[in-house]
Every structure is written in structure tokens, then in C-alpha cells.
Length: 180
Image (tube, rainbow, N blue to C red; front, side):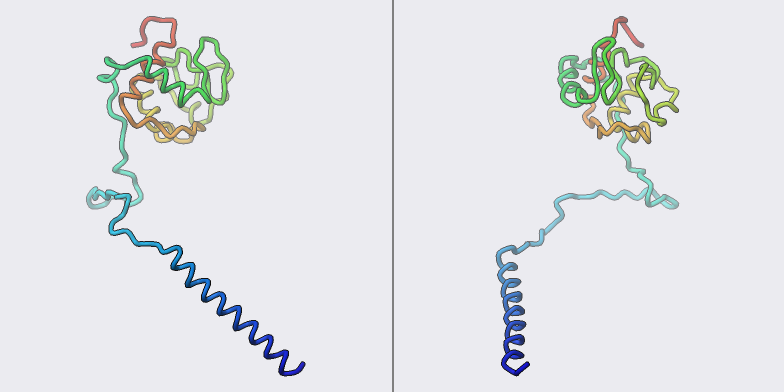
């Protein structure tokens, strides 16, 4: 190998490095990220006092009591909300088939995990509660917090009036006059 070929190899390496450096400089000018003056998302940190567990979610937002809102609940609005967010997994008609989730006919006032023919998760089967207005509200607010281990992937309804409307609609899905 003569010196001319070594010069070609050295020149190739130098040109490749120069192209890389120039490309880097050009890309920094084209895509120039600007640091924000303040965070877009503010995170509130609350101190719960001495001895508190840093990892505990003591500032967890809980569902507001729903009974007062039920008096003015709008069944038609509840039906629209339920059709929009629940219909992919649930049916509503009497004797209706199960989908990914159980049929919701007559759910208000019934015992949890009682619909025949539906394979409930172990988390649901272990529950002994009834679907009262308050329990439905808490479940619709954050299903995974109310029943940890549920297979339901819905994140929840945070607006109290929407929950009240959906519960009023679910209450209308029954042959009996009242479930109190």
C-alpha cells in the first residue's frame, strides 16, 4: 500500500467528520428548542405532616357525595353519556347479552358481580357490597381505586353531574319503581 492510498483513506475520514459536524450545526439551527420560562403542568405537593409516607397518595381526590345531584339529574343526558362511553363494553336492555362487560339492566340496588353468565374478575367476586348510588358514584369516579384489580379499563367520570346523570339513567333501567 503506497502513501497515496493512505492519503485517500485519511481524506475520507476527515471529510466524513466534517460532514457530520456541519450536519450537526445545521440541525441545531433548524430545530432549536427553546426552554420554557415556567412549567406547563403545575404539580401541587402537599405536606401531610411528620411520619407521612412519601409514596402514599394522601392527596387522592375522592368522589363527592352524589345524592344531592341525583334530584336534578338528567336521564337523557345520562343516556347520551352512557352510550358514548359505556356502549362498547356494556348492553342496557332487559335480558341483553354480555359484551366485554356485563349487561347493566337493573344494576342499581343489585349485589355486585351478580349478572349470570359473566366472568367477573377475582376483585369483583370478592366484593359483598350492593350497587348503591354512592357506590356507583365512587366506582364511576375511579373504577380502579374503588375496586383494585378490576379488569375494567375505563378511567372514570370526574364531573359529579355527569356521574349523577349516568346513575339516574342506570336507575331507569329497571322494571321496579324504586331502589332506595
